[in-house]
Image (cartoon, rainbow, N blue to C red; front, side, top):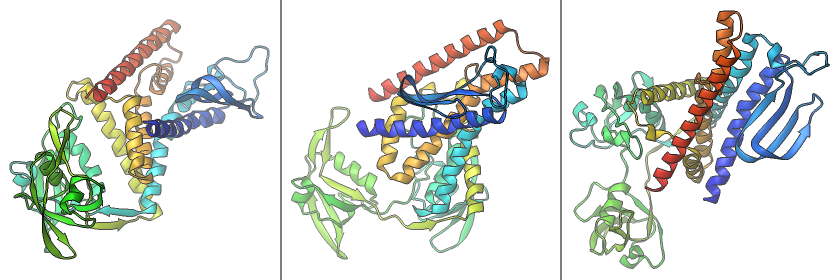
Length: 444
């Protein structure tokens, strides 16, 4: 829990600083004096004033931050370069200042993804498992061992990239074309009509729902816990488990299910050890599961040796791929928000700080790259959220400036006040909903 909080603070700090830096630089560009740049809210813990008179502070509550530009001209002080007020600037300039925050949030996403693509990494190949009967993949003719090399004409290099490109079509229930290469290096193309996703996406594996699972190899015993049922049965580190009971189509998930469902009952195993088949019997020890029913455990940590491929891109390709991925993610977020408004997707999918902290900790536990990708996802989400034309958000302030451009004069003060009051009430309601969703997830 503590590590999740730490990684949450790191995530929010990076995302907020970059977002507010956009506002700060745009204000400077337009000659607006920035009174304060704060990381966090509440009581000031650290402060420093620069030569331009901007106060840089770190505050006690690390749940965001803000830039405070000079709102009105300073009384009795002649305006000078860099000491102007927001009220003195044109609506175009104010729109630029408010738009710069979301723009920098998206820019951070592009920078992170570009760095990841240029660094390169080992990733599983996009090789498909045999689809379950009746799934869209099985109906389309997908076979075990088919490798995805393209989706709708866009090249696919890895399983990770395939999942990224497939996410939006799966959520929206679209039809896609997959370019495949079978184990004999013969290419073909299939068309898959993906199922519409359920309204509540919590805990739903959309790829599995459509029969598009990765072809997982048999699990290997990575670690044997001393005193466990696995050690008692004679399982050794490095054993490849190829059969459990009558099941020979094993991957890690299927093996875990077999063990969990046979608490207290002997399960015959066949393992490969130094190229030889060895027969064992293991009796899973019962423990209480999440629903109160007994589940079997044997005290063996597993891993799977997926066929891997090293993928790295050059600078130009990386920036292009990163830009496409960032704006695809942003546009997907917009579509999801619109579906929530129309009632096609459940509001339960909105997450609050507790869930974000949980995901921050989990992504960090998977390695630095996963954690950095999580930061990219959060910064893109923040950028999109702030562009929503709700008074109180950057998008709402941009909307006020747009109306001023159209009318030739600002909206009446009472209209702006009522709009801000409505916007803050709506934001408060969304925050409450997000916290309630977090509580419901924790409660199971």
